[in-house]
Length: 267
Ligand SMILES: NC(=O)c1ccc[n+]([C@@H]2O[C@H](COP(=O)([O-])OP(=O)(O)OC[C@H]3O[C@@H](n4cnc5c(N)ncnc54)[C@H](O)[C@@H]3O)[C@@H](O)[C@H]2O)c1
Image (cartoon, rainbow, N blue to C red; front, side):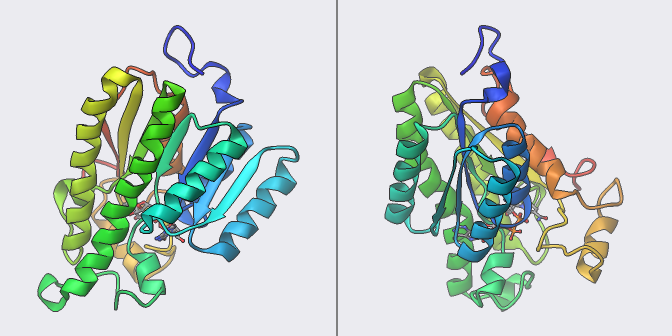
């Protein structure tokens, strides 16, 4: 898995990667980029149609590459753990697990939130719970299933996806920001807990990314870009690249880090 230098040797050609929330957006970009590197993949998502389309695309582009898919909701701990165990059995374990599923777009699409942004006083506890269930419990559930498998293998990497909202706050997204701040604190804590046992835990905190959250050309995307020092949103691939860095390329010695990918220091 890793060479004596602690670097990924041979770009982990024979090591598998599990990604949650990879039918769209950042997770999808990570899956496409990892497949191009010959990395075996377990792809998990709630959206079966989009997940199937991605798997078909990757299998056509990379014949013979081992790809496992599971339609599963990360908020359902038991189903998620079963899906992850099944994928691990098929692929022979994982080098890394990326807990990416999250955001608010999927909740809006599913009618579980009235909109992506809302003033806190206009929001309701049932909505807070849905946001926290996906963005915090989804990550906890993923980590809870992943860590025993990584420990059994004797090494591995867990990569969490948070948000700069969890570092600096975001108007109209207070509960989401709270869930992402919790993910950041969880990642740092788990990194300390697992460092003596060969498992790294690192967190990526994207800023504005051109996914369903900020569709290219939309007024919301333009407004968000105005607050970014570089004056533009990130492409999903720019964030996916950092996920793969922590999952595949970073030295084993790097753990407990939070990397903002935000086009300039977030204010
Ligand atoms: N886009 C941004 O500007 C931005 C900024 C900061 C952080 N992030 C974070 O990056 C991650 C990916 O965001 P994105 O913009 O690519 O989102 P997206 O909505 O484009 O994709 C999210 C993916 O997660 C899946 N998903 C949603 N709920 C799920 C569930 N319960 N179980 C399994 N899969 C589920 C969706 O089907 C989708 O494929 C999220 O954690 C999000 O909070 C995004």
